[in-house]
Figure 1 (cartoon, rainbow, N blue to C red):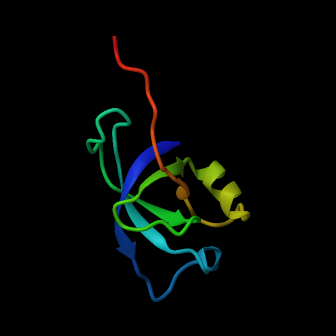
Figure 2 (cartoon, helix red, strand yellow; figure 1 turned 45 degrees about the vertical axis):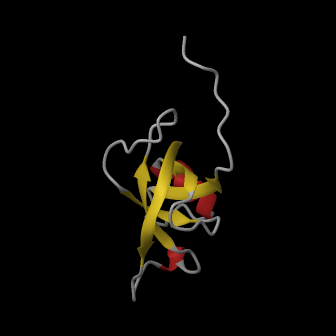
Length: 93
């Protein structure tokens, strides 16, 4: 799983039936401590109705992502599974 920030939505007129009813979002992975962007943006199916600028938890592994969607045949690599309300961490020594 990764922590990411929702950057926007993707709209498509035709898509795999496994995505029916699921919005597609563009997310930017972020560092948990600093909140700074890390790496390339990812396209993810959204199972929790996230919005732009939400901090989210993303399952980013093909077989696990397909398990969330309930269909092993859906061509999905990433799924948003949670919206983060708060992060509590110990200070670095």
